[in-house]
Length: 474
Image 1 (cartoon, rainbow, N blue to C red):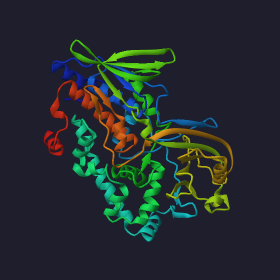
Image 2: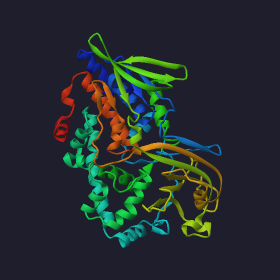
Image 3: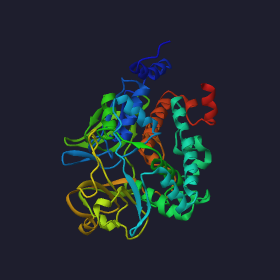
Image 4: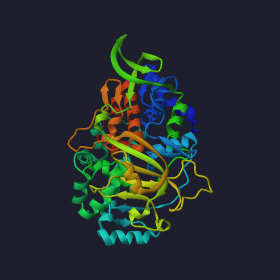
């Protein structure tokens, strides 16, 4: 039998469900048009079919935190810059949408303590390994083994989702992947977990702290699972989308023909019609207030924004003050990325010499003595003195403040996925770990959960011993 073309493949779940006797939902509302919103719209259409009306509410621009900033008529990623090589959903989005991987421009990294560099990357892989061993013994290998074990189990989610399995809570999802150990990893810190497997305190203080400050803007007290996902991204090969990562969001919404409504959702109320639940979405836009009824609603924006970590991105076009980093001659400064240790006097978490989202074959990274575009991550906006510390002079500074990641607290329970029968919350997954791929995984889970609940296919929800079930289904 010849394989079905992609448009017909999208219809298969809906056709099977229709034969089960219940009509698909007529309309689904998605709150937020970031990656979570656009991905859940795409996956929902895959499950329920193209006849379902998809309304996506977004007050700001499509893309959410996958935003870009313009400097000298060129666009640069302001956040959400890199994607791990094992991010299978993101890889699939790019392939489906006909997008391309951005050409990689190599650059070396270093970790700065506020006084000196505690670790410097070189052009030679073996020398880098030797330096890690010299400074930290086999801590690097123990870290690698720990991260690889977590990632190997995490990759099971793709098999589960390919077979249509879904989870009604984050705890059930984690338990299916790594048992109670994965759930416990959301309750204890990454520092505690790494020290337990033999990683030294010095390695935690220098390297682990620097990676987590760069990725989450927080300390080594973040939960172990979130830390493992961040460290996997720091170790493995990463990529980005040519033209900007936000093209994934706009592309998925265009592909699904979703109706993007430029409005802020102010509330959701429950109603009943002909014996079935309906959700009334109340919104406020430029033309005033309004509301609409839906069979299903997915909230992809944070319900508790005050619990999120404030983060500041400063995109600076200027000349680096290499003397601050111990290089009086700027021509000799070799690093494109600077991470920092958890030192009280340090006023920034990380900074990197960024490349535009469109990279031509002739593009070259600016020399250290030239004016370049730097992205500086910090907890607070940089004042003039701090800018003067980092830069000899600058042409422009663009500052973006946002609630970027959950303020991780290992004592908190995980947020729910289900708020009501057909009302779902996607962004709670960020309390497990926050990355583009985690959000895509959560979006697929919500779409499968909504589908399985709608058609009462309870055998596909919260099943135990899934690895065995998946093997027997092959």
